[in-house]
Length: 457
Image 1 (spheres, one colour):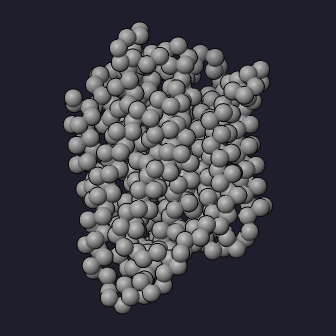
Image 2 (tube, helix red, strand yellow; image 1 turned 120 degrees about the horizontal axis):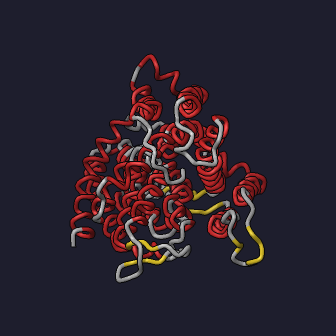
Image 3 (cartoon, helix red, strand yellow; image 1 turned 45 degrees about the vertical axis):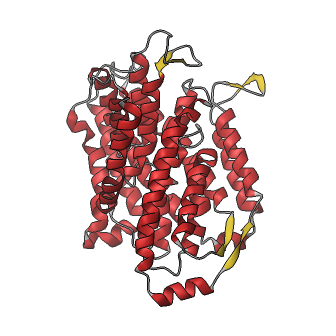
């Protein structure tokens, strides 16, 4: 939403809180478990809570607070829905859908020995690829061969958790196409290659996590039954890559996301202004081409369905609408929060990115950092639009938004996808709060170390 001065009442965030509680608690209640398994019921809850937020805006929210040009309740409602659905949800879901569909047409076949070093190699490769084909693309490309490799092992849950942390989140901080928050920063004027300056904290954090995982998996490997290890060692098959044409489609997704910016001149033809939704149309066309040209046996072998995508679409519809009031509250109160140091931006942006979607949260703190900088000088980045922003604050909020999306299942879209795919393979994943026990134990000490090394110098 645009910059505002009105702060909604605290109770207006209740639908968003209820949305989070539904995701966290309903799967744990025995009588609700079957109800929650159905995506249509997730959509029903999302729509009901979204309706409560929209009723607040239609009946109770003051008109001038959202913009003086809005003169009616219907206009206010259209404005809120435009922010939530047209400007945020649709681009978010279409990008995820394209990457999910195209990556599902690539199959890395084979059965490597499920040694700790093999799994650690998967995580390392995924942590690198995520910045270049997006966290969703890297996650969908590698999660299935990783699960296939570990099919004979019983202790696999920790592998999926580290995969979510590294591949679905932390790996995507080197380029704007890696993670949605950084892409929004690029649209706001951050040079495309500026995020390569985050390489050192990315490399440090990824290396520490892979090392922790390797030690953890070595211990878990010793707990496997000897007969399972024998089967795993006896069923080796060399790796073979199928569906290679989908890499061309992935390249098309990257180029479309980076070049087709609505309302901006097309880089290759400056006289052409990119119309609204052209980018999404191209992404959907690439996904459709992938479906049409990829042999069906590849998708069958990948056990590819749209169930995981449907779950993400249903839940994030509710999240994107109900979070409008919390975001507006942040916009109004953000400048008075007293944030001036990089470590404060790292933890504030990261903490909220754990529960709000990290893309709009990034924009809130980007705006706060932008408002604190008014002239050029040492340590100041001039944005492409002419504004200035402190590079230390930009680095901190960028890393916070990307890194701490790993703290919960809803911190970033691919998190839920990987969880669903693992559960479809019979792996018992932890609950919402159970996952947070892992993330708090693993990530919070590591993020404190990142703070000391990179933000308190």
